[in-house]
Amino acid sequence: MLPKAELHVHLEGTLEPEDLVRFAARNRVELPWQSAEQLRAAYTFTGLENFLSVYFQGCRVLRTREDFRELTLAYLQRAAGQGVRRAEMLFGPQAFLDHGIPVDDQVGGITDAIAEARETHGIDGALLVSAHRHRNEADALELLELVRPWRDRVLGAGLGGAERGNPPAKFARYFAAARAEGYRTTCHAGEEGPAAYVAEALEECRVERIDHGYAAAEHPDLVARLAGDQVTLTMCPLSNLRLHVTDDLTTYPLKRLMDAGVPVTVNSDDPAYFGGYVNENYAAVTEALGLTETEVKTLARNSFSGSFAHPEEVRSLVEELTGS
Ligand code: ADE
Ligand code: ZN
Image (cartoon, rainbow, N blue to C red; front, side, top):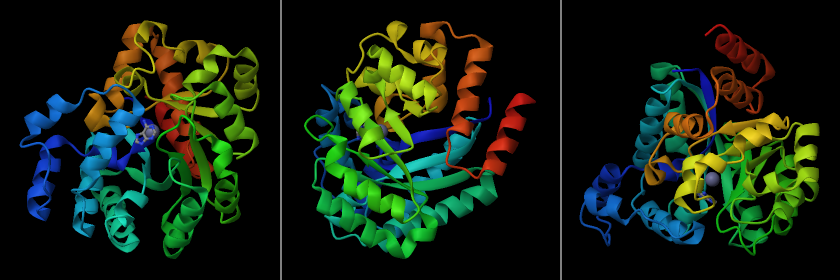
């Protein structure tokens, strides 16, 4: 129950099989799976793109403002139960816009749940919209237009989706536009893609945070730069295992990066698909890498200092952790 922040979780990836089946029935959406058990059995992935095809099928069951509210509330309740004080949640409206679901229903349902969870569970939720990199930059720029009416309820902008062949630089103008509108910025890089994508996200897109950053570990110059500039990496060990980014957590570079001074954090990515929420991810790396209690606390501290929360809030969260 160590107090912590979760900085890298896709709301769509928190859709548990039971809820997926329930939403499908309620919204009369046909699925290739008949039950939650069948769904779970289908969750073996050959890589990121194979995973994304299943994930986007799952997204088809979310249709109404109430669906988005329930999804978000269920995640925030569960996260609060794992000691998460602050959750910065990525969400990709483009898949739902394709199905004719208005942005108002998507963001409205999510932000209703954020307000409710703050009251009921004492957790501070924040929303980051995420563009799909396998689409074009014009679509990403259009996404910023579409969420503009909700500008005060959306904290940041990110980039996810199929990484290989879709370098960050393809979205340099998207990130420039996001920054000009005052959004905080983060970019998936170095998950399946090369370390060069991490450097590119920093140099060409000037993002504040890197989601994953796994590939950077093999490049000493880049590691030194991440440490020097104190760029937070939001790493996701169970995701990386399930998507074959790594085949063995005993060689996972998280501790090496931490020892080199990079502010690394531990996160769940798509917990309903990868077999664990944030605490299961902490437990997996703690066991595989033999982390000490002090190192685990450093990870939790990094999650607060790397968050996009107001500095006052960061300070009070770090104080709570230090006293724990
Ligand atoms: N969207 C949801 N999960 C993702 C991941 N692991 N990488 C890129 N985009 C994603
Ligand atoms: Zn992710």
